[in-house]
Image 1 (tube, one colour):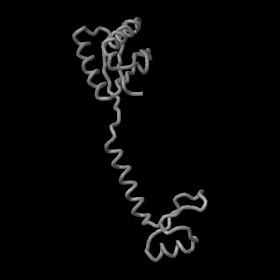
Image 2 (cartoon, rainbow, N blue to C red; image 1 turned 180 degrees about the vertical axis):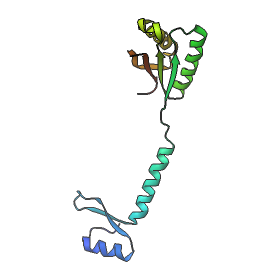
Image 3 (cartoon, helix red, strand yellow; image 1 turned 135 degrees about the horizontal axis):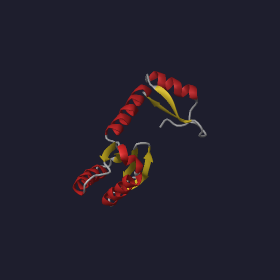
Image 4 (cartoon, helix red, strand yellow; image 1 turned 120 degrees about the vertical axis):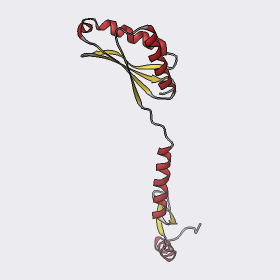
Length: 147
């Protein structure tokens, strides 16, 4: 703390110490300045930001493919896998690819999707309801604790 002084005096003190005069709060009355090594400050700030990004977990989008004629054992296995993904904090995209005559009855695929959601609804919320889009039916699930 050097107190209140003219900018020219503060600049000469900073030059004598071979440091920079950095304005911290320019809108205050009088403006607040600090004598520091600005290059080192910027380096430390970018390093701290990189470390914060390293420790952050990004939610991935995992995909699970079902079929319209899936059996109960297979859908249970897929539901367990989806539950594992969701508890790890990842998003899950569930898809059904319709082939041949299945295109005539897309409601059957939507029913399979709804029954799949009923199996995982204790750990998931439906982000996007089952929607028919051409040959595929898709549904997105989010972990229940995510916002």
